[in-house]
Each structure stands twice: as structure tokens, then as C-alpha cells.
Image (tube, rainbow, N blue to C red):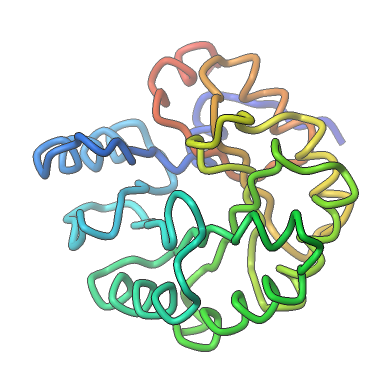
Length: 219
């Protein structure tokens, strides 16, 4: 069945995102207001921006952007973020471990964070797909699922290898099937790019330029 990607349908799939290091508390509050105004699913901000008053879902990142924090630090960060109002955690996997073939480490780390927060908290794992081969993408997605993740996510948007691609989304979706969500993020700046990610199998988008992307969809 072909999905009709209308503006309202796509808006409800967006985590409107502001992870800029220079962003002020006022900037984060403005991002939250814009997310609600646009009809987005959620607003994604750093944990230091919490608590955040908003009518949409509150998403934050953990171990961001390198993923090289210790597991204990990631667990503590996730627990504190949930206590400050986050309903979804986007956890950065340790890329070096994936490149070294140590996906069991990723599974254990995901499991530790999953165990530390309530089941009602949605856990996404960022894998930096642009820095991986298709086989590595599939391997780390399987590890994330085994560790109890609810979603796999392409990118932080901060890695020099790049952000989301339709190819990576296709591999991720093929690997996790309908069991997990797939979030595409990083470098999605146009309506065409957003549509390509959705057609490839993404069911959430991380966008900083949500207004411009949505402007290209019909009502």
C-alpha cells in the first residue's frame, strides 16, 4: 500500500531537533514552541535543556555525540534525563566498538540503559550508519534489538562521514523488520530527502529545519 505523505502525516513523524552547542535556554524553549506549532511528534534537545515545558513528546540524547562515555555514565545520564522529564532517550552507540566487531559490547550497554529506565521510556540507539558498511549496520542493529532497544537511529549529525541515507535506512528496516522503529536523522534538509527516508522505511525523522521541509508537502 502506498502512503500519501501529506504535511500533517509527516509532521507527526518528526522529532524537531536543536542540539547546537551554542543554543541558549531561550533557543531550546523556542524550539519546543515551534515543534508544537508545527504539529511535530516531539522536540529533541540536550539533557542540560531539561526540564522543558511543551505539549509534545520530550526527547533527549545520551552519550552524545561521540558515544565514548562509559556505560555507567550513559546509564546515569539517561536516568537523570528521565527524571527531568524526557520520555524518549536517543543513546549513542560506541562507534569504535562497532568498527572493532565488538557488537556484544553494544548489546550489553543498551541492555544496561534499558534496565535502568522505565519500560514506558522509548529507547533509540544511534549507530552512525554513514561510518559503517551494510554488514556492520545490520550487525549493530541486531545487537541493539537484543539489548532491548525500541528503535535504531542513523546518525548524530555530527560525524564527518555524514548523516542519514536511504540505503542505510533500507538496511536497518530490513534487519529489524516491524519489530523496532527506524529513525533517520542527520542532513535531512529538503522535502525530497525526507520523502526518500520515509519511502526507504523510516518511521521517525530527526530534523532541525522542520518548517522548511514541511513546507514542501501538501495539506
